[in-house]
Amino acid sequence: MKKMKRLFVFAALLTMLAYTGCGGVSETLTEVNSAAPAVAENGISPDAIPEVEPKSAEAPAAEEAFARDDVMYDIAVADDDFGGYGEDADFAGDAVDMDSVREGAEAALSVIKSAESPAMGAEGEYNGFDIADVAGEIAYDDDYDDSDAEIIIEPEPGEEPQTEPAVGLLTAGEWKDHDNWGFFSNLVNTGIIEFPSFGIEPTQRIAVTVTDNDGNPLPNAEITLSDDSQSVYRARTDKNGRAYVFEMNGQTGTKITASQNDISQTIEIESALTDEQGNVQTGDRAYEIKLDTEQKLYSDTQIMFIVDTTGSMGDEMLFLQSDFSAITDEAGDEHTTYALNFYKDEGDVYVTNYSGFTSDTQEIKNRLNEEFASGGGDDPEAVYEALKESIYASDWADESVKIAFLIYDAPPHSETDFQPIIEEASARGIHMIPVVSSNGSRETELFGRALAICTNGDYVFLTDDSGIGGSHLEPIIGDYEVESLHDIIVRIINDYKQ
Image 1: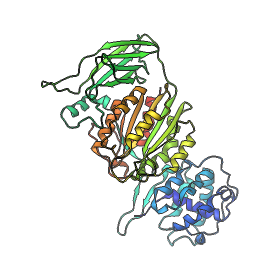
Image 2: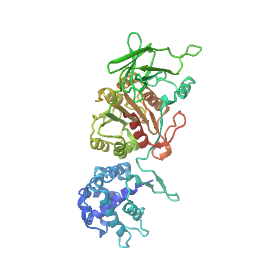
Image 3: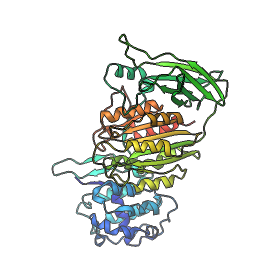
Image 4: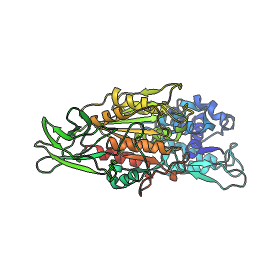
């Protein structure tokens, strides 16, 4: 079935107007002619463009970006039918503000409704789409932006028309095992889920809360689980003064030390729980430590998106491309920086492709819009290489809130051991937020949950509710709320910021 977006149809209308010299609109569309061959390839022939008498010959020149200025590019690359449109497709966003768009729509609408338009079918349709309705919707909707767009699916003979939500409307759920530790412990102790996962053993948790002498939480305190000779696991407290350390793969600890502002306190801890046969059980050991010091908050926030860009990740790439600006508007500020680390697998055009942190959101946006999903072909991907580079080689600041979203749908290669990487992420205070996408397996889920648990992060998973993409695995968790992925990401960022 052929897919199309209403907003893409309107790109054709703008193209029609531009060819006729429509005042300020045509003057601002300086790149429109370069897109004409691709437009023609998609059934819109310049020869069929009617003469247009615009409502206003003085449409204002562009001073602001059209809604989200990459939306035309997003739509073009989203559909194989428009594969030739390429980077020229963002000309509308770069050149036209919404006032100009509506001026053009008004002009297009008046011509479309006339019987003199050779491009129109007998019932006001062009290539099967009611362009009058599209132009009218844009012209008269003061709040129109790309979120109003729909994917129109042209039905097969005898089928009813269908619609799908626009790109950017991916739905997801969020789960935090730390807040549901009894549920998680029962899953492990009954054998419903099993660990370790790629070397990560998240079951032997020790919860630590650090406060000042008055009981106020102390963020960013350094926590060390150790035995008599060496460190076993390290972490940093979040803004609520909480941190989690783990006994992993046979390593056990006997004491915990909390430190901040050159003040430290050490306490002895109990051994792990065992059953009647002496088998170690998942349970809860919790301790509170008081330090005679003041709060030390971090004003800076660093956000990294680690993204699988193999061929199955097209929907997720489109989400980031269309939603990144909105995410930064709602969750970012002058103290927020961003980084990207794309990854594929051995034998692809690259294994990892990392950008350093920057506060220039346009730079990040440009890098997102240059990227597309390709390669892969087998199930495991270069997750190990991506996380190793993201944790060790990237430029995380010492005094900052650190959040890393891992957006992926395939597990790592089986021979990889993530224990050292995850210990380092926890020691630096990097909160890992896995976002499991379509076609994920149970192995992918448990790996993601282990990452989130051991770095005091959240587990996020896409759901089928959006109707976008392939099937999404239902995780083994309790009740959860279906939300937009956009809302979950924004909330997580705001929850961790200090």
